[in-house]
Length: 91
Image 1 (cartoon, one colour):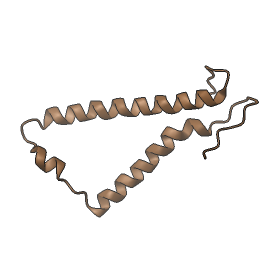
Image 2: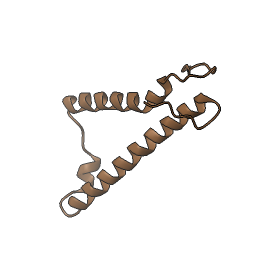
Image 3: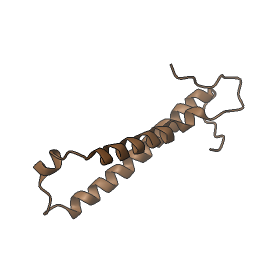
């Protein structure tokens, strides 16, 4: 990730990076969901969707995808800046 600095404190830049990653994820998810809803508008039963229970394999895949998403979103928090400020350390 390039060393982009927008604020005097590099930790603020890191938080901004996390927010931008989240914003990008939200946009992609909203766009895809809108497309799926349009395509399934007349063939999807809402009760079936709300009552869906994933299989164990699906749960495992979702957890792996969740972990990858979290790692990607938090990546800006692990970037080292050439700055006197210490790197972010999670509590």
